[in-house]
Image 1 (cartoon, rainbow, N blue to C red):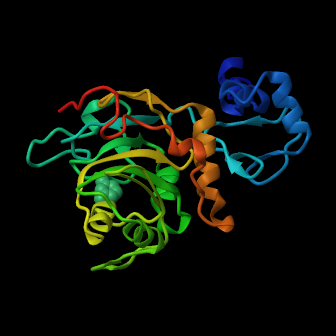
Image 2: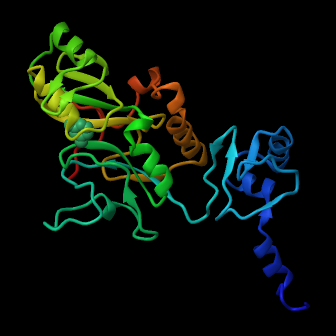
Image 3: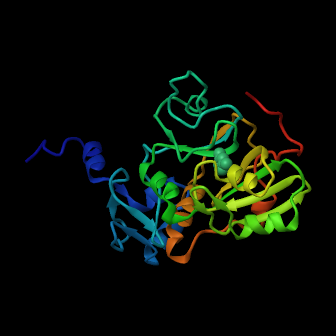
Length: 277
Ligand code: URA
């Protein structure tokens, strides 16, 4: 019946947008590149391979590239924050302490993905993307997180080997970790478990309590340019890489690559912006 569908613009909105336009908007490539991706069958919409020209509703349809979900919902935001010392990883704090959420825009409301101790610095994701957050924090997805710890004393080879192979904590042994020793009192540790104060407890268990702890990588994400308290939007490619890291569960945990060991926020004891807060 005439009038039911509203204006052409309403109709356009209710019927969604062309898939290649949505893909181009999130930075997958030019319209032409996106059309080629659709043609080659690498894109799925709600599990099905679409025909070129298919219309989608970015807020509802599940769109994947090579099986990895694409973040096409216009309402989702993903921030990468360099958490400063002394902030709490919660949305609000009953003791009035500064929260990580107070460091990013108030709208839309976001929450931290996992948590860092109040005294831990470094990379933290804040988002309103519940599905991605759930994937990144669920232990079975095993996304690697890398930390640089300044420790008391100089760890021996045996201590480093223990950290690498697993140490006995009061809540059970730790899984094998990736460990290196870039300077006498610095230990770089990558773990894929998310136990409470895990790195601090691991280092203490081998006789080297942590003096300072910085998270330098979350799966594929590192950024040595963010100063403490600074944040930025994740790029669409970074969001895709996070999904891919979380989806790689069947292949075992994602692993930090070599660049991970050379980049990330200011290292303890290294050059870089001073501690804030
Ligand atoms: N391990 C810790 O000990 N603390 C953190 O904040 C994160 C990992």
